[in-house]
Image 1 (cartoon, helix red, strand yellow):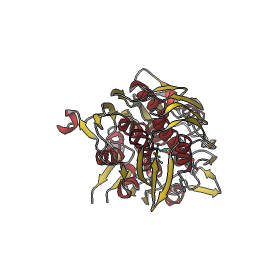
Image 2: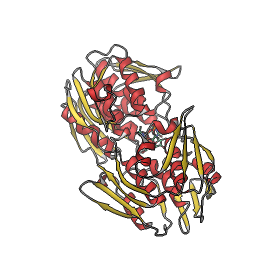
Image 3: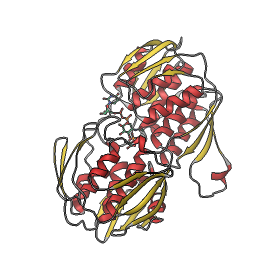
Length: 429
Ligand SMILES: CC(=O)N[C@H]1[C@@H](OP(=O)(O)OP(=O)(O)OC[C@H]2O[C@@H](n3ccc(=O)[nH]c3=O)[C@H](O)[C@@H]2O)O[C@H](CO)[C@@H](O)[C@@H]1O
Ligand SMILES: C=C(OP(=O)(O)O)C(=O)O
């Protein structure tokens, strides 16, 4: 298993290109199941999750063709991939593939909408809570699907096609919104989704579906109206920049000190996060190239924040913020409201000398004058990168084990940080 070695204390200076968003690319790829024509996606990040989803889609009959760049082995910033699901050859998404990644469960809605049936294993993904799928299932049932659970699989059918209806989610779910939104595009009649997720990735998927001929209004607000159509066609769409990668590198620069431009980043995707960092003493400027993050010696002020659905502070940046606040000048309070078990980085940060006390969903982080390098273990995707951020601040060497979690969501992390002056390397074993 690969490991990442970091020697802390180096400032970061230069430019970091921001990749396409993993959490938009995955549902966009899945949306290609809705049409026999080609959906071309540009700016697809080169991540383990993307490769795994390509395997899953190929299993359903999708042809995934890369533009020449990747094939020639050149360094690239964003792949262009053409997805063509001319015929769905298999409506089963097997356990062995789906268990490794949460988003793979979202093939359920599109397969059901197009083929009238689907058999999809219950999903995996980051182990950050129980992560039920009840909202996905009741949402599809409201569109007329018959759903049974059989041996760890969701077996869904709608032989006459899905129909219009009102789906009112009792709780906001990004994945259930994606699943029902995609399914609704081919329903007979109008579908209204109430209490929908407003995340930019939902808006990006809706934009691509609209280019494919779907009739959608209200994406990005809590109420989405979809007028079902008989069929969808091909389209070309560019994946939006990754706001979680953007926030992560902004916090890395804040942690290490220095001056870095996050190229291609969009400030409008991070409302609240940039202001929170400014209040903590980090200089942030939105420029025509992206977002410039500067911290030159100023002390970090502590923060009080809780995670919330968009436009609130994202749970996917909670671990990174906690790492940063380990060196703040005072006590921060960070509350995790989305996932009940998303504090697994705390014990690893403690190995580096952090002073963190957890009570229920609240972490109280008392800033310390220094962190010191140690051997730590990555437990999930965002927890892993929080350890990298802590390693950049720590004195001496930090070794992050189990970095396969990182490769699910961060493209060329060592190269991006290394090119700005970080002492970081991947050790293959
Ligand atoms: C691939 C992807 O895009 N993953 C993101 C997606 O995950 P994911 O789509 O799995 O997260 P959800 O928005 O669905 O989860 C939000 C909350 O709703 C609960 N819930 C969800 C579905 C359901 O049927 N029943 C239920 O109770 C979950 O347990 C959680 O407490 O949104 C999360 C919240 O922004 C992010 O942290 C993940 O990075
Ligand atoms: C939790 C995440 O991913 P997943 O939903 O695939 O587990 C994430 O992207 O931070």
